[in-house]
Length: 275
Image (tube, rainbow, N blue to C red):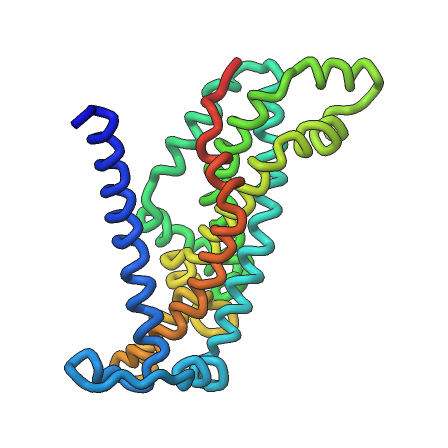
């Protein structure tokens, strides 16, 4: 058997295994979410029903839609702000010569590796002093700092591949730096911008620790925290409703990722920064 044939077999086998590894939990979650009861797990008959979804969407005690609204608001506010800040930063680092510009990305990356648990206590005290606990501000500010390194590195990769001659020509024509960024650089780096926007949005939407520690009730708690509270609300684990809520939230993100996967992959695999 040729080496190419063996390589193909390994690639196909590995791809199938990876696909099953990823899709099995999602399928299992979907199966339980559409079950009228979970007795089929112990040998009972499976009964298809939408009752779990009806419960989570109509029960006022669960506040499912409030949690979802909070997640969407926080992620929608944070994502564009992060992209604007990262765009200006990436443009300055890749297009303007100044002392220390090569160190800044490494410094930002090194700071971002600190675990959330190491700073959440200080954040709680700081937010409490300002009276921001259980508010959108308490989540947006940490999320801005937490996701900016990701967006910055994606945009750095794209901006560094755009010829600097375009900037020179625009400057000769009298364009200012902000106009060059928004009219020339960002349109050319659209895949990177979309990739960064989507990844930041998903990261903020799924974040758990900050949302758990810096909020106290459904008026500001996000969907990830809301789902984790299901056990406490019912006194036992309502697996059907829990899986329904998880699938209800996860499925749109999966669709969003599938639709824009080309931009995400291209944004993450673009070549390294070049001078």
